[in-house]
Length: 206
Image (cartoon, rainbow, N blue to C red; front, side, top):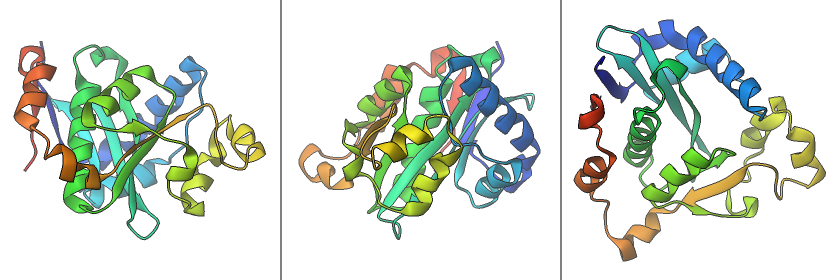
C-alpha cells in the first residue's frame, strides 16, 4: 500500500493542476451534480499562494486536492474544490484534506467564518465532525464574486430563480466565535479517531 502524504500545496505542485481540474469535471459528470469549474491556471495560482492542500503518494502520484479562498473582505473563507483520485478513494484522504484545509483556513484567516456548499453526504459528515452547522444561504457571504463562481454549475438557474436563497447544495458554516463556548479543537483526538495511520496516510501541517 502506497504511503499518502497530505500537505499544504506549493508552487511546484502546479504540474498536477490539469489532472486535478480534469478529475473535478469527470467526477461531477459521473455524480450528475454541479460544480464551479476551475481552470488549471486558477488551481496552480492557489498552490502558489499557499491556499491549496494536496495529497500525493510517496512516489509522486496525485491523490487529492482542495483549496481555500477568502470572501467579503476576509470575513468569510470557503474550502472548495475537494477532489480525490478514484484509485485512492476509501482510505480517508478526503477527510485528511478537509482537516488540513480547515486548519489552513484558521491559520491564514483566524477571524473568518469558514463555509462551504456541497451536495455530498461524505463532505457533510466531515464538516459535522469539524463543528460546522447547516445554515441558510443568507448566513453565508453576500460577496457577488463568490456566487458568480456558481455560474458554471448546471444548477445555477435554480440558484438565480430563488434569488440565492437556496439551491441543491447544502450550505454549512463554522464560526470561530463558537470556540469561546466549545473550546479549541482536540486535533490529536480527531486524528486518532480518523485512523489515518492505519490507512498509511500522513498529514503534514505546521
